[in-house]
Image 1: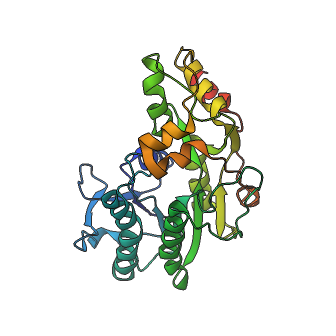
Image 2: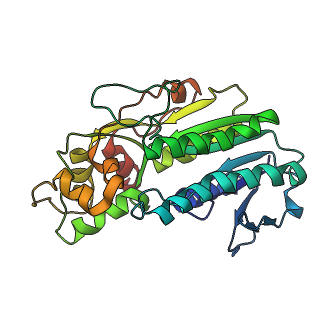
Length: 295
């Protein structure tokens, strides 16, 4: 087994790469800026790739995509979000036909925000896509992933908010908290589907090594917590308390535009597909994420 990792230099990708390496599984990372021995150059915009060493790749994990919540969704940012997902994956499909003759399994990662938002409904894998911007982005992203199914086994994993003190949403939320400016966004009652970084890595490894069939779409979610619970959890881990009043939703939308709905609206999804894979979730509570690191 050899793994080709796209998006392997980011928060999630680095953790995935480390774990596979520690398990003695060869991993190659496609990147515009190769810096390590296992990095291989690619430039999907100009359709260039260093593909000579990819002939024995058996599994692809595609994590590629500019960060959804890193910048305000301006027209130029929306183009970047689209091209880094859909157009990059389209080129990946092209290059694998030439350079990856041994490919057996393609795993495409997308986002859990595929349905819009709802205060009461629990969305399942087969529910239709929503009509909001993020849902249509996920729809097109997954369409690019599904092109691989004409060649090889294909699995799509929709990740919830990935939580770990080493990066991602945790560190972004921790910054104001460390400055004693922490607050709870919106009402604080909105549900957030999340997954620990440890479980993202464990699930992706399981999908590569387990000799069984999986649901085609997997909701990568360990549990749901309210925004208030996540905010206070992070504050506690940082040795701080949240003193400021909640940040009203209308201010969030003024500051972040339509991206603010990610922070102020509820989303509840089922994770029966993850359980059906046979993977055992390691972290089902927020405290479990950091308890293992302390022991």
